[in-house]
Image (cartoon, rainbow, N blue to C red; front, side):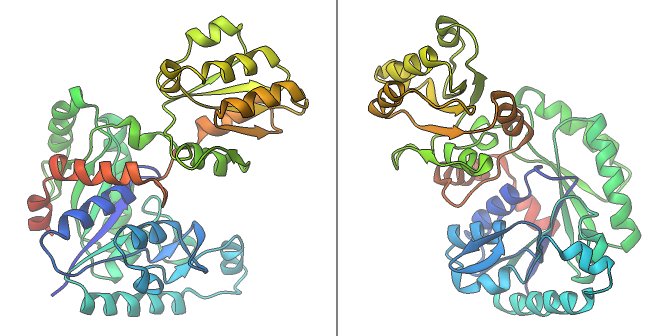
Length: 363
């Protein structure tokens, strides 16, 4: 008999995929056959020549499931999906049937199966395929991932749980993620009090980790849609701080913290030269992750030569400094296929911060 867990969340970026990676890693130590499916994917990517959901591609690579890729991502949405459904040009029934058939096949092939939802509980409602509806239809008990905190987290949970109750889905566990280490016990204490009159178990997920929360240079280049000029060992460098290099050169140096990305206007020759020069010094390599050169003013030839000679990772962007800064700070980095450091850390943390036996028993 296959054990199924539907991974839902109160919203985007709570840590659904991190939770899926963790549970699959731990389940692999107990169950001989583990599996994963993202019933429908709102974020597509090309992987091995196929259009699949980005999370399915990640799981397939990490756990060597490429041969199951078609099963792992049966329905992938595109930019026109919502309009087609509202215009009556598409029907959800064939999609639900396809998802159901794939899940039934995976149930036969797996001992432990993760079904990962998309976004918050209501995502997919336009097609009649939201997380609550899918969990109920697939008869998969639900683990709902929430953020860290007390008041606003409880509010978010009740808002999402209402939809699961409406559909009759079986929510068995709340996993509070990205907990502040010094507030972990207090947070979990009050969350458990808030749901003490229900049958839902509250457990702790990962403590907040800058390594997991922060983006790599490669991720940022894709986010900004610009080329990253870097050597192969530099592209996975994790950026812990983002700052604007608009002050004097000395002030910019004073503001450098561990693994900083500096956004500099292309007209600031003195700052660009200074940062490139600092990158030659070993003690600044840990502080300087790279630079984003923003603006429409061309970089002077001699300045470009200094930058190239330093081998500092950089991106050239035509947007303004303010636009680049806003884009980066409005985004929360997802784990990518090439984020080996993050994936290895997730596996290590899963073994110490998650009580898999408890989770396994509840489901």
